[in-house]
Image (cartoon, rainbow over the protein chains, first blue to last red):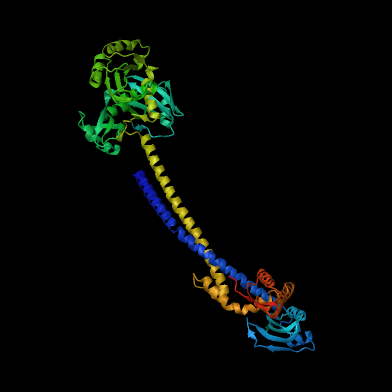
Length: 165
Length: 460
């Protein structure tokens, strides 16, 4: 009787285990595609997020470079123009500073030369961009002089970053 | 023809075949090696036999004599063996002089022949004969797990040791007839067949030619064109004892006399061989309540092993599935955690909405990108380089710039050239330098120059 009970229990358990195993396997096979697709989507999102994160870290490094400046304020543009082109007339027009990230503003200005040599212009731009923080040229418009030669009217749109605190 | 094993396939390779009748006992020890059985005569009274069998190292096989049992061919109205087995008692009952419920039986052959009917060959013995045989063997110290049927054993062993020369004949009903005659001290048993097909068997207490002749007459009718007399048994040793019997039989049923090698152990060899090797016409009349405990144990163990294998397979499947799902869930959780963390970092949200982590992060990033732009611009290549390169290239291509505007990498130039091609070359150079552009030209006849405008276009 005991032996019979053991056999009955064993066969019953075997049948349940096998049925459960087959059922689970069928379910897994059916869901495998959906699970894989879901994981693939998440991995793709993660990759895109990691790209954004890397860009963000790059931005932070850029900010850190500016934060590390001894004097995080741009030099006076009219003074720079005067020192580069003594005796020449150049119009310097400043624009409203624009806040960027907390603690920093973007300063913009326009410099108009009525008659400047191109080579001296290039030197001037190089000098502006060598400052720390630099004055970066966002736009450069040149109109050649009617007299010819490497001389012309020049309008420069410039931008720099200024720490406000 | 069905191939049956009378004894469950097991690790046992040794079988003692016991030809026991009255006080005589002829025993061989059969050993199965590479699909063949080698038989050696042994002393049936030796304690080694009982010890081997009791320890499980060997199995013993005896048989019910032909006079204690019978074999019978039946036609079944079904081609299915399972159905035929179910209705066998009903089919057989009407052919027996005693109730089938008082008999042990075994199906030795089943052939459907491709038609709607089937043929069954059954070996049947009364319970009292089975009990008597088992008791007789036990009294000799033989615990036989297999109780074979004498007629079938003689027939298959004769074909095994002395195959029919031409094999199966092309048509049923033709082919040589073989009569296997076992002559012992207290009996004569005849097994009769045509080609390899067993037809019938007969047993008698004495070797009387008339009885044999009547049996042949009833089974065959007329004298077949090809007939063999093959003798075996203790009385066939030396041929002389059976020659008298043979001469009388051959007078009515002429055929050459053949004697099996080692005729005295022939039946014992047959029992050992049939118990160790699966083959045709096997049977074991220890069925039902007579089933040997070792057979029951083997079958039970086999069933338990099968159940255990199913259980193991089921557990393996369950375990494998669970492990896979857990691994997939863990991986997904890891990725989700990273998604939430990075999205939260970028967007500033504590808990970005699940499934939209990238969306909220992108929006936050784009919203803030304007604020970062001045810092990014500060690290871009200087416009000075572009200006210098443009002026130098213009000079090299012989162009005179009237106006030049650089903004966000885009170049707008208007000017004049000496000829048409110079503008083309300059425009191509600009393209190569990463400034996609559109070139418009027109002749300025008064100046003998080509006026051109190069304007920026967005890259595709």
